[in-house]
Length: 296
Image (cartoon, rainbow, N blue to C red; front, side):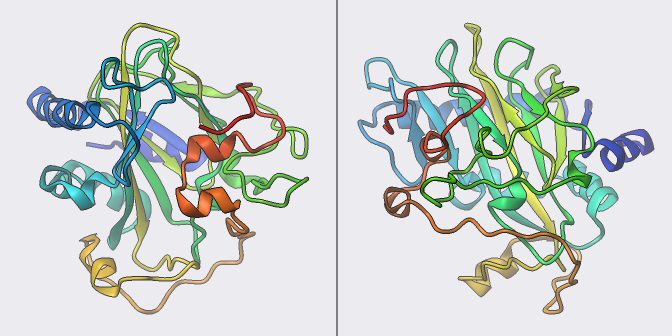
């Protein structure tokens, strides 16, 4: 389980990496179920609300980029987000009362996996307090060359960066490096064998590069919030919101903390029809990983 050292590291740096939370059998089953979903998505010719595809994807050469909200769509993940090892870790980091907020599987196929630019999750889903984190479960060995998560130590206690394009005013899902330069000195890679788990604070600045290797890099990401962290963008479905409790008790009395709290608006018109983090990040003027300006 998560140790006191991990907890102290998370509090100081804004992220921690731990091994041994899951058995080899559990990780093997997680990989098997994910593989089945990738096969299912491989025949697609266009993205769906559940499956996002790489620009190079074609049924004859499939390249699936992301599986959205698997805990809502598939029974296996609905149970996995409540795994005892995760619950134990969450209670040590954000308290006894926790709900799952989001989930996704980011898939970086060998040689073509898309990068993710510098950003803070806080700017996507602001809450009344920042007792909120993302868990990353490594489905593959993650090394320096296949697109590891990069985190800036201590950034969770620093500034809230602007995630809007200063020319258009639209939310672009990333820090525009012309408008708000990021000093990435000291950024650390989250690496380890399959089964390793990362935890990063909702305000921690993070990114990940393209997959430069032939080995896939699959990462299950699960966002969790303390029950008294209330989403400022509102609750659309109360029954679902209550069903998302994974441990402890829900509350209708949010804990208010004075924090800078920007909201992800206005959205570009194109993103309102179909939002893609990867595509929307291309709308920033300057990024860490330069790519063509056109949106797929």
